Length: 118
Image 1 (cartoon, one colour):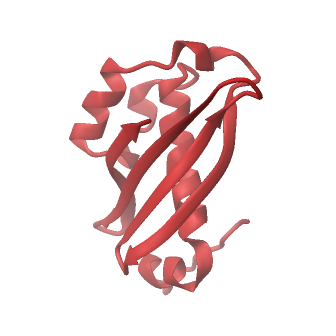
Image 2 (cartoon, helix red, strand yellow; image 1 turned 120 degrees about the vertical axis):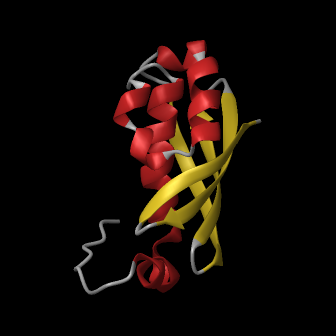
């Protein structure tokens, strides 16, 4: 799903309209790429809080470096007009992990403020 936002469209309104999953998937992909070593932390700094950045710098999913390890599904829920909670399933056919996160709107853009690997 691709959403095109105009300057006049508030992000909270767009998410409330139907794209909580799109927001979670976009931010989640950025986070997962850092965890799997495919992207540097400085590239996603604007999408994560200081606490989540610290977690990303100290945590790696070494098994996730293989090409088969990828984002499998995203399940998201809009909990307020400015917050989305999501669970992302990542893995291969043989190993699956869940990433649970909260994404909040901060000064007009979405930021991952809570992340947990299950």
